[in-house]
Each structure stands twice: as structure tokens, then as C-alpha cells.
Image (cartoon, rainbow, N blue to C red; front, top):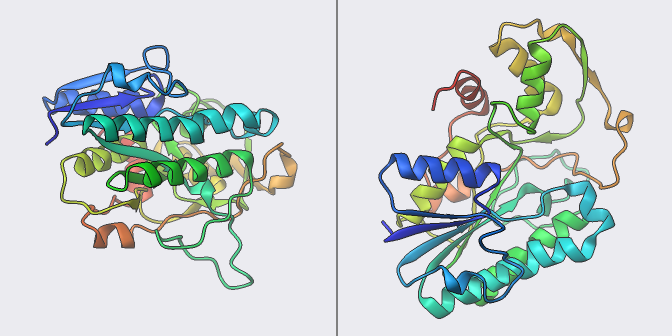
Length: 287
């Protein structure tokens, strides 16, 4: 176990959940929001980190559509920032776990049936966000080869908030129907399960540098929304499938970006449970 867990981006969903879970386990945690530590400043982390710490970088520009209109900001936060963190960790003798995304993949299987992406598969991001995150992965590993890059996908907490599951929960508790995209497939992932995987990696015994940490299985947003309604006792028929062309967005999303945990399991990471099981637990306040 590291002497201390230092979390950057601790004001975001994953950072908050990770800090809370680590503290419940009695760990020494330093949770840094973007106001405490701006990762675009090359010297920012050096003021907080010490030898033996494990830094978990949850800081990112995650607004996929906003990144299209502000690529410089996306690159500064998602690519340059992780490189600065890796350099600071290399100087001080700290470890680093950097959180990345399924959007580094493009969803194109050349006409072959799609299958969950494994850690060795070729990347091919379609958006500014995806390209900036892939550049961040490379910056981390280039500067600090012993670092971990952990890709995850479709992360939610499930309580009140801005994530997809929270939005569907509010819809389920109402009376209206809702149209949800059925032609984008990914790996819905509980923030609580992701936090558990990050803590396991921090404790050692898992080989890197690149890992996937997502709940097992795959689903469309439509599948996920219906599962929310079912778990809450609402009529799932109120969720209606539509194509993504009904909701045009500035940034292209991969039509398929489910992540496989097989390669990560071979490197020592405990597989995350099936996505439906994790979703029901999150909706009912279980862990």
C-alpha cells in the first residue's frame, strides 16, 4: 500500500468517489481539486507530492462536445497535463495512475463483427476529446514507463447528478416517456467499482502499463436506460429506442467502444462484475 494516495481532479465524480472509498478503508488521502492543483501548470503537483505517494489522476476535460470547439484547452488538460504529472512523479519518486477512456477507440472493425476492445488493440479516436486523451496516455508512459494508464467507459454514480444513470433515474421516477439512443454500444461502469479497481492497482501486484477497468458486458444507452427503469420498478416500455441521428452532436462518438477486461485480468486486476449487477447496486445505494 502506498504511503499516501494523492488524487488530482478530486472535485469530479470519480475523484470524489475514489477519495471517499479510500478514506473508508482508512487510507491516507490528499484530495486535490483543480483549484488546489491545476495540472496544466508543470510545477503544480510538485508542491503536493512526495516519494512513496501514489498519484491518481482523475483530472480531465470530459465535455466531449466542448472539446471540439476548444481543442487547445482539451490538449492542455488531457495531454499536456498528464505529462506534467508524470514528470513530477518521476522527479519525486511517486507512482502514477492515469485515468483514460474508451473514446481512444474508433469502433471500426473493418466489416468484421465488433468485439470488446482489449488493451493491445489498435486505437483510432474520432474526436478531439479522444485524440487528446490518447496523447495523454502516450505522454504518461513516455515520461514514466512504470505508470499505469487505466481506460474506463460510461462512468456513472447513479445518485442525483449529471451522469446518464442519474438522468434516467429522474425520468424513471416521473411519468414521461424518454427517447434513448440504441445504436451506440459501450461498457457502463459504476464509479464505485472503478474506484475499487484503482485502489487495487495502487496497492501493487497488477502489471501495466495499460489496463481496462469497466464493468463486464456491453450495452447500448437504450439497454442501460431500460435497466434503470426496471431496477426502480418503472415501466421499461416508457424507454423508446432511437438512432443517434435524432440527437446530432458536435463530436463523433464511436458506435462501438465496449472494453474487454481479459487482458487486464491476465495482468493481475480483479475483473469487475457485470454491468447490470453494478447498476442495480448503485441505484439502491449498495456497494
